[in-house]
Length: 185
Image (cartoon, rainbow, N blue to C red):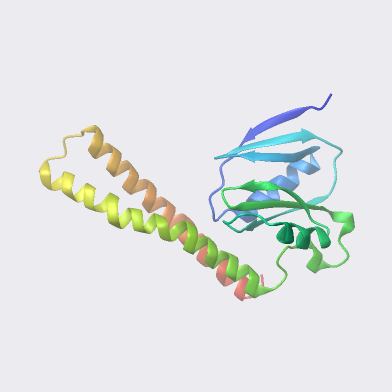
């Protein structure tokens, strides 16, 4: 009988390298990833403890057979997709050289993925922030000269704070990753 477990763990769009390492640690402890259930549920199945490399690729489009075949040709096992992220793994013993440890071994591909993440994830959030959240928050503040603590005011202030956190945390982290990749990370 297969033993399975579910772990709840939240990673932002800028934490994908940490997510890869965490999945590798889980596999080393004898739990291989079966699938991801949005937003933050990881389903694992018991397995032998192995040195395995996990890699994530952000596509944000339908996975094609050609795309999967390309990774399969390089020894990567496709595990599934979640919110545009495609999950792959490879046994460490199948790694012939250091470049085989990463899906993207060249700087341009790594930077291109970071830019794609920014365009498809951060840009829409910026549009929502400036087109909906800020105007509604300003309208509520002007309408009620004193902060009355209405549910709507609390809701928009909470969204404002959440979005600021996302922009600062993810924006700075993605910018740092891009710089590290350029500098030869």
